Amino acid sequence: MKLPGHDAIARQADEHLVTHRVKLPRKVVDRPIRQVGKRLAMALLVLVATAFIVWVDREGYTDNSDQSVDLLDAFYYATVTLSTTGYGDITPVSDGARLTNIFVITPLRVIFLIILVGTTLEVLTERTREEWRLNRWRSVLRDHTVVIGFGTKGRSAIQTVCATGLKKEQVVVVDPSSKVIDVAAAEGYAGVVGDATRSDVLKRAELQRARQIIIATQRDDTAVLVTLTARQLNRNAKIVAAVREEENAPLLKQSGADAVITSASAAGRLLGLSVLSPAAGMVMEDLIQQGSGLDMIERPVIKAEVGRRPKETDDLVVSVVRGHRVLGYDDPDVGTIQLTDRLITIVRASPGAQVAPDIRPLPRD
Image (cartoon, rainbow, N blue to C red; front, side, top):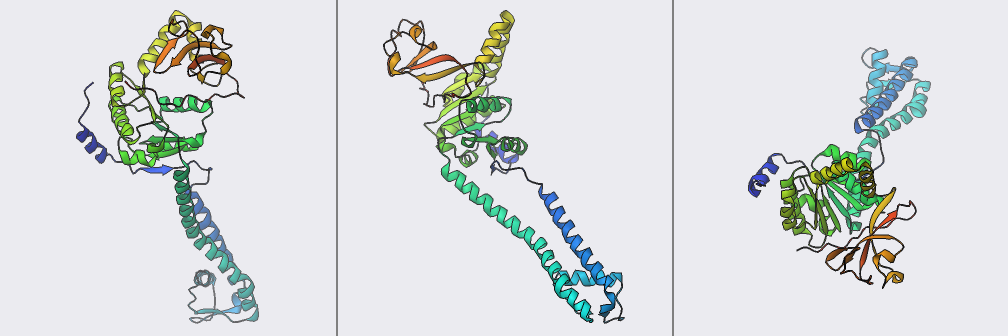
């Protein structure tokens, strides 16, 4: 694969730079335009009500220009009164009009000011609250999972991990599309809008403190740059990346990925298996879909299994992880199970019993 130069990609990113920001999941509320529209309608209703009250009691008011108050004068008086301007050219002269101003117009003026000033205060309060939530989120975020790219691959990957017990609060999605981040936030994930090849964007996702990083970008060259940047920021995290072309997998591993999945080849092999045996294809699809049917999990060895052979355990053991090696259940080097081993087994999925995936970094050659 021929990758474009880093400087050229950097210039391209600058040209198409998206303002990166963090978006936390939140409850669904009315759109800002709709909220402002409601407040304006309420303010207009108060204005009309005040003008109507003045016009009904117009005999108790006097206008310095012509001594009479018509409908236009009533609206004018309501406007300057509610806005606390008060020019004094139209004034209540009768006792009834003055009592109406005390007990009716004044409360309406207060309501009018609350509606207008309250909108500004609410905006400031919302900004303060959002800033507080963001600072608190950053202070408590540790050992989380960062998903770079929330397309079909990224969404399916994080759904699989969450099916094993990972909380949505421990997931941060990074994507250049604000619409995609809105979808992620609606599903309960925190999101960062921006180009993941930039270190400042990844730092906003607190990638330097993450435990797992899933790279599911649309392009292989982008995946390479993201992997290089992510590994530079975090030396200990487990990085799993997806590529389209199998020939690019070694390049991803050299860039710092612990595991590389070739999406096109994996899908093609599953298609081929389904052609040869539809039932086998269904079983494989069931195995890779966590939380239902059969699940393939990695777990530590229990004391009762020490000294036994893989075939002698209660679970169906398919492989034994010993040190840096993954041995098949029938490998002569396995011998008997040791306490320091880890077993890859096939179990029946149970909603009440979720097994967290292995979080140790895989060895890199």
